[in-house]
Image 1 (cartoon, helix red, strand yellow):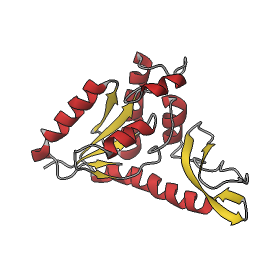
Image 2 (tube, one colour):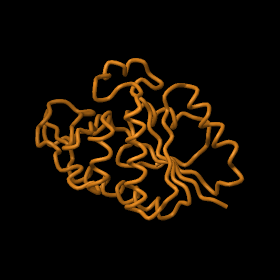
Image 3 (cartoon, helix red, strand yellow):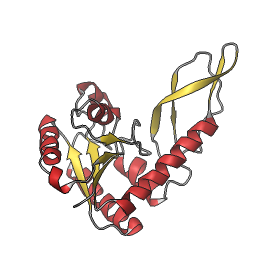
Image 4 (tube, one colour):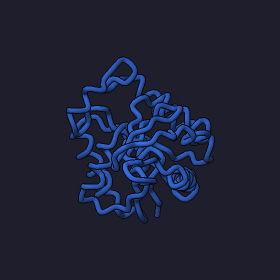
Length: 202
């Protein structure tokens, strides 16, 4: 029996939200790209993977904030982290807890590579910018179109990079463009239960 796993690679939080709220009853884990904005597939996903996530979280700002809550910072690969919480250091002064973020993302990076060793088949899941939420069309620009052949070619390039890095030749991509794609994916999961020991969204 095959062990099939699924890994999210962006491009925004909507795919994570949709999978979290789905009725597929799958184990959901965190990868370095989960709950991030990484619209530029080349810059924000392929480049850090090619570099094996070198300096992926080395640009956390020392800035102090006046209010508590979520803040956003951007790394050298232009990945946006919009859900990092601040830590109170004094009255009306808050900072991002660098130590906690480093630990969390080091775990996610390690888990990211371990899954390719453990799984028979790995599916990379990526959504278009306007998938599931039309409000995200505001981010459309020349470098990250809603859907284009270049993005599909880049996904194939990414699969090949990971095959070489991990020695797992069974790496595929699933590109969510419209609601129909989501139904197709649900059909795929629900009709392959006999061949799946467990399926993980990472």
